[in-house]
Amino acid sequence: MKEFTTAGVDEVGRGCLAGPVVSAAVILKEGINLGLLRDSKKVSFRKREKISKHIKDNSYHAIGIATVHEILNLNILQASLLSMKRAIDGLNIKPNLILIDGKYAPKGLKNYKTIINGDEKEKVISAASIVAKVFRDKFMIKLSEKFSNYAWEKNFGYGTRDHLAGLKKYGVTSHHRKAFKPVHKILSK
Image (cartoon, rainbow, N blue to C red):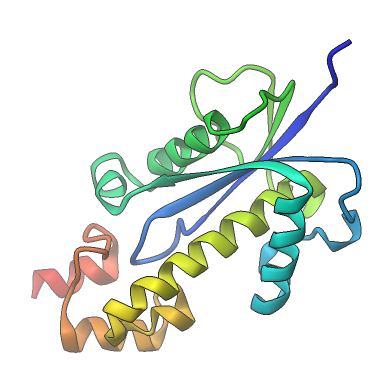
């Protein structure tokens, strides 16, 4: 008899002004410490890194990315769904059920359920939330080495005061989402 598997899926970076949107799909294995799993926004950066490693060591997981170019061409919702689909498709084993954070799901999925605030309600979605956040944060930290004027190593592309000050002083990079209001405003001047 085939083992029943549930995948959790979540995305991070929808509200950022810079960088890709990243999703993770996770299927937990037995032996995972469920007590560690909670919404990634409620866990400190250092703790998230340790928990992400534990999750990856005790799960099947995959990352899906939608680029800034895809965000601009599709819109942020469709790009988020694309990154989710890529994460799901990247799993080595196919789940019987897919639990997705939010109210929208990628087209063409079978046996899925969308759950608003799912990262707070379902441990498997919490795990996906943490894996996606750690992956994207590390991506933005690496990017900040090349683009140091925007404090991405601290704000990860969100529209903080430091990021907005950098935008005003140094302009827009190819990693900025040009259609997003604060970036668009600077380009329109």
